[in-house]
Length: 317
Image (cartoon, helix red, strand yellow):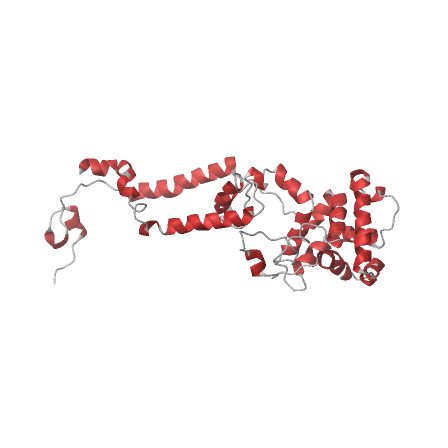
């Protein structure tokens, strides 16, 4: 049984079983490597973060929306009541709105998944939150006792009146047959300004508030949230991506999805989301199968870029 080689035996140029090392030798300074690899790189990262970092703004909430643009909040609340908002007509997984899904031929994955997170925008965004108040407004009972046709008539009339009012200001709306809608939207606005609407929507009937789905959908139906994204160059047509505070590495992996949205035929396609997802899935599959595809797997050998990177090694050979 051979004894282990001592460090000095390697230093003298011998290897296993006493064989001499015939290859090249070079000094290796572990402390220098550690300094460059940790300290220098850390300083470079901190400098780049300070110079090129993205904005770290406060969270957008229903409270900030209601206080910054109350008129837009009221217009959106009326749209939720009338089921004319983006969420109301989104389709699965929130509702079963006909013709709302994206398809490729007969393939309709959105409908196949079904309605997994059912939403009734009037009830979930307006009526239920107001019903949680210690003294719910009488307008809630008036709304609940009306027929769906009557409710639609009220919200349609109030929506048209808001469009005609200066800056969509509810205070400038002309008199009309709006039923309890102005009282409902006004009470919801007050609730949002106080900050209680955020907690009610996020709780969703549970003790812990970890589900932001309702709040985000409500925000997305108005123009306030969209305008903020546009001003920060974060909208889809601006290649917008933003890291959520506290979550790393954030959304940097979405750049490939954003790329396809900027070019045709994806850019103008009605089913762009589905086309982009399938395209990225196919590209990912091809990347995974590179070692198994004849011709493609031979590219590193046919295009010897590695010899340029390791040119010193190949020069010695």
